Length: 306
Image (cartoon, rainbow, N blue to C red; front, side, top):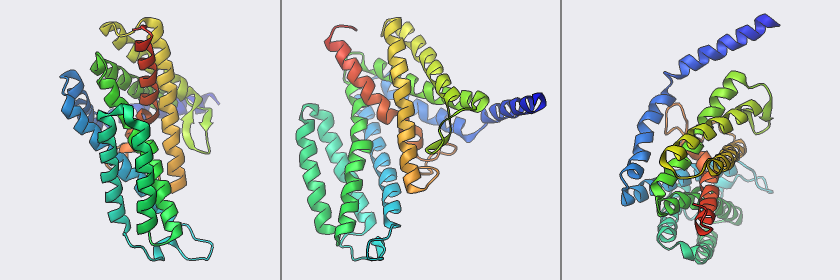
């Protein structure tokens, strides 16, 4: 028993050493400066363009995943969806969806007070557009479902980084959010691989463990707490609470994308980043954590707590 435990620990250490030279590390070293540059140098339009690219990548990956899965299903009369007549081919529909979501994102970014109005207008647009050009009812319902899902999970969440950036000292708040999410992601990966034994959600993501979750919270709290202390953004208690909430929200986003990948029966959302998979494999934590942290920060500013 003791020898097996030593052997397991040796394999974990070997994995840790190999991970230092994994393509994931090189990808992060290239991607992180691109994200931090507009925050450090306060480049407003660069940040907007970057977030718009994130929206388009998220829409592309999520719509591809969901539509490929739905098209493999069989209708009640035994005819596959993709064999039925369709006025607008899938590729053109996907381009139209990405363009529409980009327009929606741009409108909401510069008129956030109009979020309910624009969302209702675009919901009606998606419904009418898909009903008339899908070619059959089942395909129309699939496209409406995918369109609304993409708006909720791949478009609206990326408004939060823009709204945080627009706050006083917004670029510093956004770096804090990145520290929380990336600290949680890295801490969960390392501690889960080295010490993880108890699975957290085996049916959704077998590699997630409770030990990894605790490590994610710990690393996120340390990294983000140190940054908050150096910059004077938050008090120690505020930084602790925000790190805890942000880390849990980040792991929730990870599980949410894992559920969608299970539904689509794919391992990764794409192959954009070597070692990471798709863009959503890297940005899943931000989808849930950033909107929640933005709401809390807004409340703290309105209440005069910061």
